Amino acid sequence: MSSYESFLSSVKTGDWLTLLLGCLCVVLLTLTLWNGELADRAIIRSGGKVFREAPLSRDQQIEVPGPLGVSIITIEKRKARISSDPSPRQYCVRQGWLQQAGEIAICLPNEVSVELTGSAKKYDSLNY
Image (cartoon, rainbow, N blue to C red; front, top):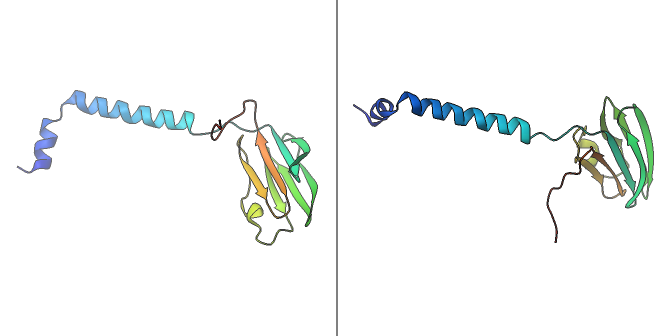
């Protein structure tokens, strides 16, 4: 008899039920706590100052001036993205669609950012 077979023969029905219940709890906690809430507005900044707050309920394109030129923020179907930017590497454009509260896209060379917010403020970390 191998060690695997002896292990299986020593595991009782209650052990399997406890293991199954633990796995279900982990899945349930992951689904409820891991996902952020859906955002309801976008805060657009240019040069470190708030340029505009836009609701995600209305599809629109917003032109935001920066030191290198104009960045275009697109809002569609309760999602937002930086669809065009004059920055050389296009990292913020490649980031794609943002839809959960707390997500942010930043174009550092052009000093433009878009941050999604919801009803409650979420923190990545707390500073003292």
